[in-house]
Length: 353
Ligand SMILES: Cc1ncc(C[n+]2csc(CCOP(=O)(O)OP(=O)(O)O)c2C)c(N)n1
Image 1 (tube, protein in one colour):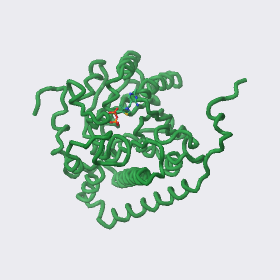
Image 2 (cartoon, helix red, strand yellow; image 1 turned 120 degrees about the vertical axis):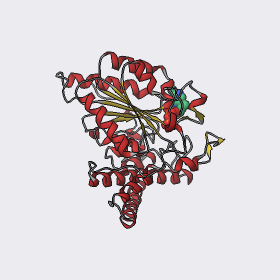
Image 3 (cartoon, rainbow, N blue to C red; image 1 turned 90 degrees about the vertical axis):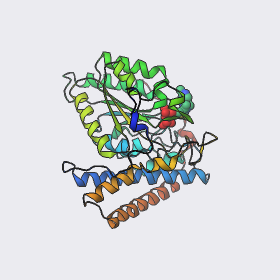
Image 4 (cartoon, helix red, strand yellow; image 1 turned 180 degrees about the horizontal axis):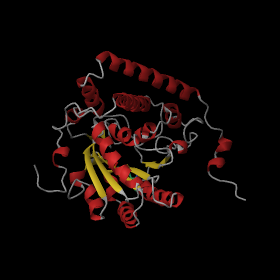
């Protein structure tokens, strides 16, 4: 094992973490089964979108997070609708894990009026304010500073600094190479703001590996430099993600200041689009088959089976039910109308008194 504390060590090793995840008696099984269903829902929704991109039915650029499902599901366990969650260009899972309907995602990628952004945004502009999803945008790192502002606003709402709502931003390891990221960490730390920074470190920014871009691969070193509390976990282990989230979100709500959760994971598809073998026009060089053994869904299924909580038949039933849900949601989204061209300006200008 490397002695460099800025390295990810075994978390980086594709040969590790293939086992069933550990489920102990403190984990309510019903909740885990619901979370498994959510992970399957996210995966199948993204597979459907990928297929529809390949068929030319979906025209907007779609960045799939297949292989990363445990992260938003584990974190969302401890979120509430008054929190302010911000996503990225790769946010289908962040959006769905908060309970947003699959149909509003499908309609959005199809540009339909029933989409979560009325069909005007596409895959990278998702929005569900009622569920606390304030938005995702394609500009790398742009939402990090917005989440810090939202966290500042949350402190105005509850000046006692007790049971605070939080700002939360998901971002990739590539976003840590932007200035706004560093300014945001500094500001949040200095003013002890209730914000959770979630770095989904999938090792790649487009086709470039983090070891080709940075002198070290553990991004939470930047949070430590700002005296921010850090947890670093294996991101394909639902229970590990949820436990770290519970601890960090608890301390943020108590007014103890920002926290940084770094979750190590891997995306199975290329940077954009449905292909597994091509990344930004280049042949993929990494060993995807090894990383697939870290499948967060399969590891959870095996963990549940090991404690006698899930039979093969019960899992097949979940797969069938979710597939039906996905097919029906796609059908409704597909049949929905496109927005009227007359509505275009409604989305740009607002009446003021
Ligand atoms: C400011 C900015 N620079 C570059 C891009 C082009 N771009 C889009 S996604 C991406 C890679 C981001 O990688 P990362 O933040 O690690 O997220 P991941 O795609 O791995 O989820 C880049 C360079 C952009 N959208 N915005």
